[in-house]
Structures are given as C-alpha cells and as structure tokens.
Image (cartoon, rainbow, N blue to C red; front, side, top):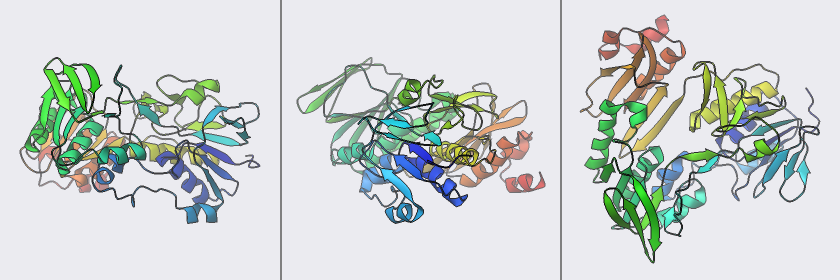
Length: 405
C-alpha cells in the first residue's frame, strides 16, 4: 500500500474524527489531512439540538483536540471546500484552485438540511451546524413562539429543548403521528403523549402549504389553518452532500454508493457517514443512514480497509434521542409487517418493544431501557430466533441469552 502522500479526509464531523483516530491507533504513520468546509475544527452534531442548544456548553462538541492532532502529525484545515477527486493523480482539488495529493481519500461530507420551497427569512431556521444552534438559542427566550415543521428526531429534540428554555412550542407533522414509519401506529402514539405531556401543541396529519416571514413574525399556512410564530425551525430531513463524488465520476444516487467495505467505485476512495449509501450485508441491500453510530462504524471500517485490514460494516443500525427527560433508543431494521412484543407497559416510565419477523428478532425500541438495547444489538446481529414469551417476561435475564449463544 502506498503511503507517500497519506490520507485526505474531506469533512469535519464524527466520521472524520473516528477515521483519523483509527488510522493512528492502528499504526498508520503517513500524513493525514482533514479538510473541513466550516470554520470550526471537527465537532459532533448530536448535542446541537440538545445540551448545546439549551446551555451553550461546548465542552462535549470538540472531537480532536489541537494538542492531539499536533502530536499525531494530523493537519486540520478549516474553511476549505473540496470540489473533486482526480482519479488519475489521487489529488483532491479545492475551490481556491489548489489541490492536496493523497494515496487514499475518505469522503465524509455529511448532508445539508432539506429546504422548504419559498421559505426565506432570518427567522426561518434549520439546525445542522454549530452556528445554527448558537443563533437559535438566542431566539428561545421564555414566552417566545416557536413553530417546528417536522416531528422527526431533530424536530422533537428542538421542541424539547425549546420547552426547557420556556418557549411556547407548536409542532406540525404531516404523518398521523411522529415516527410513524419507524415505529408503527401503536408505538408512535406514545410519542404523541410525550409531546403533549410536555405542553407542546402537536398537530399531526397537517400539510404545510407555505412559510413566509412578515416583519418580526413568521406565518405558516397549513391545512389546519394559519400559525404565527416568532421563529420557525424546519426539520424535514437532509440531502447528502455527494456533489464532490459526482464531479469525480463516482457512482452516486441518494448519496455516494459504497460496498460493505465502505469503498466507492474508485478503489482508493472511501465514503462514510450520512453521505454514504452502503451495501449492507445484514439488510442484503443498500441503505443510507443519518446517525452518529453508523458514521463511527463506517469510518472505522474505511480506515481499517485503507490499512489493508479487510473489514466489513455489518452491524445493525443503532441510534438514540433525548426528548423531555426521556432517552429513546432504537436498534435494527423493522418493517410495518413485523410482530411487536412488549416488555413492560407503554404507560410506564420505561419499556421496550421488540420487532419479530418469522420469529427472528429484527429490531428493538426502548424508552429509558438502554440495557435491553445492548442485548438486542447482539441478538439482531446474530439473527436470533427468540420466543415472544421470553422477550415479554421482565423476569428473564436477556443477557444470559447472549452469553449462552
């Protein structure tokens, strides 16, 4: 493996940091260069809608301390936009006309918020970057009127943080219930109760027709009438930043196509994180996942393969969300036809739902039950057949099942 020019990582988030640490811990001694388009050094995004939005505490954001990167010989360049990877030379071309040579390239460019058509104004916001969170925090004073469009994880976390700051919150969701596609109607109803118990005006089954700023207010026209807010946050998903891959002649389509090794259609170019559309062995198909753990696993996989250590990204997907003092965790890949087995009552403070397909555990969702998710990760990865009555019995130690297996 050539190591004359080293590795260039395009992007400054979780995937970039994990790949860098993995390379150095595995003994990679050649240069590593991180190219970040934002003015900040690599940082993680999950706290932006939670602790950082509420308290402004940035102690948990930074991923690679300057002292560490200096000691490890890692170059971090901020405010730099990469435009293309030259497949012939291996160079990464930059917007300023210069380029950085590389033996291997990791594209960890993430995504950008999906925009609502025609919604423009300084009181119409999206939450994706550190700067977005800093600006939004200043608007969430007690009594401020906030409308959140979209009740997915970002929308729900913003609503939760805004309530903690004393804002009056209305959430507009197009589906009949939050997270309906992920959880199904029975469990999605628990999300409705969580919002309303926190004092949020949750409107489901609502179509937003238009969002317009009028002076110091924002007017949201919907199928349920007009809503007036001091600020609106739009959380309707993200779009992958795959332009550099397309310009480089790589295969793209809902992100950058990678195989189970996180390798793109070019043998020396990899992709990881929100932008990577991976061929997943466990799912036997392609999937693009926008979560922290997936970015970490794919980045480590890419780094190991760059090192010549053949590694496959095959773990079941796992993610979490903190909302209204409750911790929600999900692992696996459920479908609408799966059988649901409850461990505990959804009326209780903590409970778990398991999703079975032909007796095989495919996924689990838990509220304040992280131990069950730890077990479920092992069982889902092993495609274990588990009796429903065993999963439903709170007196059964699920950890013993994993140990026996």
